[in-house]
Length: 449
Ligand code: NDP
Ligand code: 2IT
Image (cartoon, rainbow, N blue to C red; front, side, top):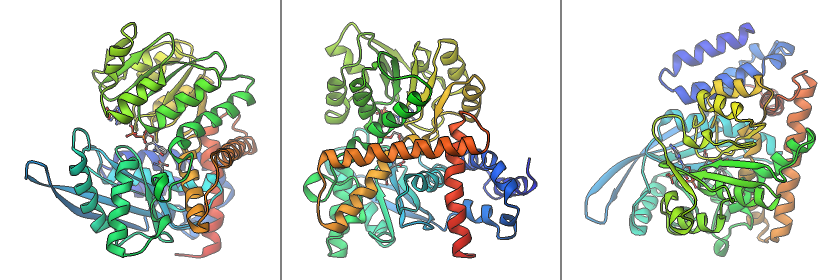
């Protein structure tokens, strides 16, 4: 291994013991940019890597709220303002019991690279809380969001830091957060949050953007390798914002989506998933995916036990992990390959464990890496910000076309970077190198800050 990279990796491991997800994300990037570092020995003197992996700022705060039954609960809120190198800090908020500093930092770190790939002026950030929105009333969600924003508001702004949604944070939560921000600041600052409702400053296509973008990226990657989505069996983990719109777009391209999941289990419908039913259960009723069988008794429900999700046992051509980090294990990767999978597209952030990605690449499976393939969401968030600045809205068709063009450009950047360094179809390394090159240029230009 390159000596400079080795030194940086040892340092980051020493300083961040127990932050496993953050270390995993940093290690993947540093190892894959080795050929670039080898060409640029001058980066060591300016501590370019050390500065890139250290957040500019990490904020934690107390979030108390009162439940409907009158009980006061206290959660922890986070915002990592990782990099303002190429624009205001930008990235989602996650509400999930698993949220901790390591997860927020890994997501913030990935976001810098993803945002650079979009070609738009957005830096990297991420935030959230260990609060679990499942089973909470709308009133409880509102009080929690108001308490969260009461602290967060002092750190954000449309030219400073612009949060959006992620797991457990959708349009409902963004609405409550926006209302509280506006109330405290006494200003209509449309671009302070993205993923807003259409009635008060949101953008058409933002809701669909991550899932649609993933499929646009897959379409490009497959076409470049003489494949298409038409007639292919597809399995999609998750049944949230990303999974639902990936399913819808894949079906529009003629794919047969046969399975989806949530954290309890997966549904298998060999006739093809009825996405309207999944939307009704998950988006509207906030129920469990198993309820699909009430409408379609012929479908199968397989409960999830242990680490290996049952969805990856199902024979498929294309696998799209769209739920959460490290959801696709090495065992699952082996099973997928054994069953003939030929392409994997990461809708979630870092959904494949490191060994699973390595296994896929080793077996010549096409892998669309998260940083590139799921960048459509944040890209349209940036388009939402520009509409807020213009005080003017674009049509669905205009935004969708922009999304498509951005995803085509991102794929092209990954492909060119992989080609330039003789990495063949390793788009994982291609994405890291393309993003790193842009960030390294900007860091060099801006001096030691
Ligand atoms: P949602 O909250 O809308 O949906 C998440 C889905 O994943 C749910 O079906 C949920 O199941 C499942 N899930 C969550 N955690 C786990 C877990 N620990 N184990 C198994 N299943 C789980 O989130 P999104 O769809 O917005 O986000 C999904 C992924 O995509 C995340 O990795 C996110 O970071 C990433 N992403 C999101 C973007 C966006 O614009 N929203 C943009 C780019 C990436 P259940 O209902 O049981 O909790
Ligand atoms: O992981 C992500 O890119 C997101 N959750 C979307 C971030 C955003 O600012 O739209």
